[in-house]
Length: 357
Image 1: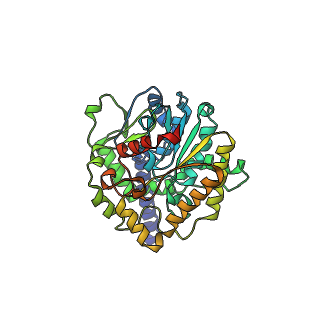
Image 2: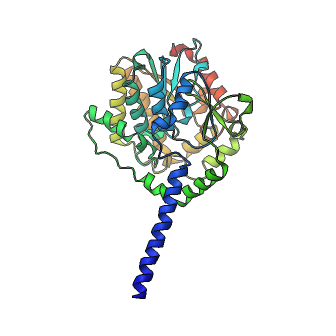
Image 3: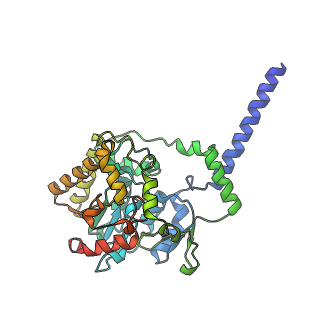
C-alpha cells in the first residue's frame, strides 16, 4: 500500500513539475513559437508606414512575413523569396528605386517559399508586382535538410499543393509541444524572464541601436548588426565547415518530389504573368572550395545545374553563382561562411541591374 502511495505521489509531483515548466515556457515563449501572425501586426503596419524595426532577439520570421503580406500597402513591383542569404536585397539595389518587398526567411526551404508565395499571390497587392526574385539555396531540394520551421506555414503550403493537384495529408507539428518541456527552451525562457527585453521594437533613433541588434527596413530587407559585420569572415568560414554543414548533410540526391513541386511553383508564377529571376547566393571562397573537394556535397552542384537547366528551358534570368569567384567576390565581401555583406550584395546587383529592369 505504501509503495502504491509513493508511486502515485511521485507521478503527481512529476506531473505538477512538468505542468509548471510547460506553463512557464508558454508564458515566456522566447522564440515566439506559440504566437499567431496578428501578434506581429503592429510591427508590420509600422513597416508599411515607413518605420524601421529593431530586432533584438528571436521571433517567428514566418508568421511575421505572413503578417507583412496582409498589412502591405505599398504595391511592391519586385518581391523577393528565399533564405537569410537574400535578406539583404533592398530598394538601394535598383537604379530606379522601385518598390520592393523582401519575404525571405532564415533557412528557407521550398515549403516556405511555396507557402509565402501562395499567401502573397492571394493578397490585394500582388497584381501590382512585375518581378519575382528567388534566392535558390542548394538545400531546397534536400529532403534530409533537417529544418522543419516551414510547418508554421503548413496550411498555406498544403493549400498550394492541393490547388496544383499534389494532395498531401495535413502536417501535425509536434515540435511546439516538445518545446514546452524542453530543457533548452526552459533556459531561454528563464533568460527572457530575467532580461524582460522585447524581441522587436519600432526604431526611434538608429544611433541608439545596440551592437547586437539588427534592423528590418520598410521593404522587409535586413541590415545585419554591428556585431555580425565585425566578425572575421575567414574565421567564421572555417567554423562553418568544421562540423555539419548547414542543411546539406545527408544530401544523397535531388528529391524527386521536391523537384516536381519546384517546377509546379515556378510554372504557376510564370502562368500568372510575373517575370522570374533566379539568384544563386554565393558561399565564402573557403567554404566553396571545401564543398567542391568533398564528394559528399556533390548534390550542391547538381542542384545548381538543375536550376540552371530549368531556367534555360523557361527563359528565366539567372544571376549569381554558388562559386564566389564567378561573381568577382572575395573574403572581404562576406560576413561568415554563407552570408554576403549587404553592401557587397547591393553593389553586385547594381552592377548587374541591366537584366533587372
